[in-house]
Image (tube, rainbow, N blue to C red):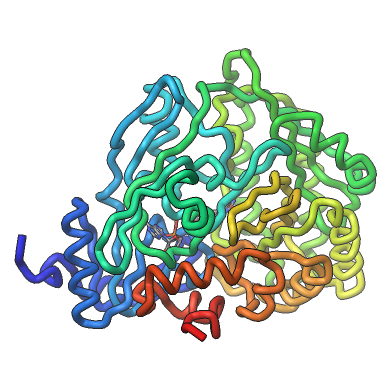
Amino acid sequence: MNRDARLLGKSGHFFTNWATTYSCQPELFFEPTTTEEIRQILACARDRGKKVRVIGKGHSPSDLACTTDYMISLEKYNRVRSVDRQLCQIKVEGGMTIQELNDNVLPANNMALSVQGSVSNLTIAGVMCTGTHGTGELHGIMSTCVKEFEIMTASGDIMDITEETYPELFRAVSVSLGAFGVILTVTLQCEPAYNLHQSQYGCKLDQVLENLNVHITASDHFRFMWFPFTDSVVCYHAKRTTKAPQNDPSWFWNVVVGYYVLEFLLWISTFLPFLVCYINRLYYRLHCAPKECVDRGDRIFNFDCLFKQYVMEWAIPREKTALVLKDIEAWIINSNFPAHFPIEVRFVKADDIYLSPAYGRETCYINIIMYRPYNKYVPFEEYWNAFADIVLKVGGRPHWAKDHSLTADRLRSLYPGWDRFCQLRLQYDPNGMFLNANLERVFGLFLKRK
Ligand SMILES: Cc1cc2nc3c(=O)[nH]c(=O)nc-3n(C[C@H](O)[C@H](O)[C@H](O)COP(=O)(O)OP(=O)(O)OC[C@H]3O[C@@H](n4cnc5c(N)ncnc54)[C@H](O)[C@@H]3O)c2cc1C
């Protein structure tokens, strides 16, 4: 096909991320269906000196996916390439969503992902690029389940990368913020399909912090949610089970009270911020009663993220969990900032991926949130800055998909593999085709050869 690849693109496309906090208007928007079309788009970008950003489902709560040059959506490049039932592995195209995998692809093959984040409307390549994670002592970020991937680099060449063929590139591209090229396919290590039995109950924050390791090792997937302005948390323990799924009768009330009523209450609190502490206490009471449920693994991992929100998340050394949470508690009490619930705390196994926030250390992720009821702006900056100051004191690393203000110098000191990552990126994308404003901030001086 020799036609001008620009004809494949649409102008006038308006991109906004899921949270509607960042948007952009790319010069051309592409939705390729074949590898050859992707190659043509990159050739066209090369000829015209254009930047290229590939997007998944646009769920990153930052400007990570934005560009004003060429934007490629892999929404239509989302097929299953092969399934190996014996090895429990599946090879899919980069635009495949976790939702489609969970609902149709994996159950049909009696397989399941071993760990996931809170939502499934994400692409496998997007998840991989940003170091998306779930929780569980024995589970790394989701990129650690990737066995192999194919990438199309700025030159249009396709590289098939495994830990054996290109060990360094494997460690670099496994969390790479879209900076190395178009991730065409991903081969995932899955496990036989399973159900999870989840126990949920309320208890004191201090009790959890004092017995943290006991909690983390007591089940396959432990997390807890702290409700600021209370001294209490809701714990969630999930274990693999042979029991059959049970219907959850509280679903209706969760939607009505957890969604419509909460949004209205939080909207009122934007005029009367002192109400936030009562809202948090009320919602703690609604969540703290002990509850058991059994369901398919992904349905336990996922939960409704309610309405639009500002979020910020950092990864800290696991042993600093108590110190950091107590500092956040002290800051909220002293400043009386109307911090929304929940502060979500999850645990992830160490890995050796250069830019993984869990690189080289057992990790605790702490996610803070400010909802935007009816999409209204809600002040969050003071809270975000205080949180960043606290986690940076213990070597915190930001979640790549979420807002943070760190630049190259600081990041370099947090990541032992930083220099190697930057050298490899320069080698495979010497002209910076895959950069955007976010990556220029993040990589700064390391974008050019010294
Ligand atoms: C409601 C909600 C809940 C969330 N829950 C969690 C959670 O529990 N745990 C967690 O860790 N994170 C969570 N996140 C963050 C989310 O997992 C990441 O933002 C993820 O990257 C989104 O996937 P996406 O397909 O939307 O990617 P996008 O946001 O579209 O893209 C993310 C990055 O991947 C790059 N990219 C995408 N596809 C390709 C490709 N084929 N080739 C090269 N680069 C590519 C983009 O250029 C961009 O840099 C959540 C976000 C939201 C909005």
